[in-house]
Length: 103
Image (cartoon, rainbow, N blue to C red; front, top):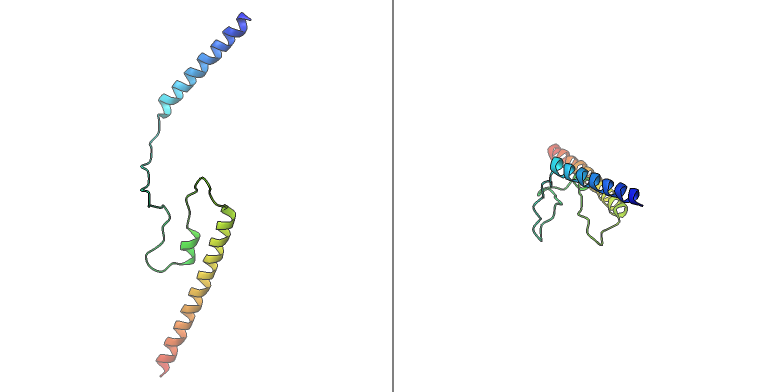
């Protein structure tokens, strides 16, 4: 019984020393300043939004969260749609300029 107590005491002292050594080596770390209540880390360009802008979007997770797979699927779909619409619009604009140049 006495040997078991000594063993537990030695294990506790070694664990405490390892914890203190790790705390001294790594420190507390730097804390990030909290975001303002209405602020969000999600960014979009002020001009045209392209497919790659939508693909780069990331949202904060909250306690009630969201299903990442669903949001990622929606973002991919929106990015494809934006790319398609932008390509079609640019092609139509080029055709219009050609017709106006032919006049």
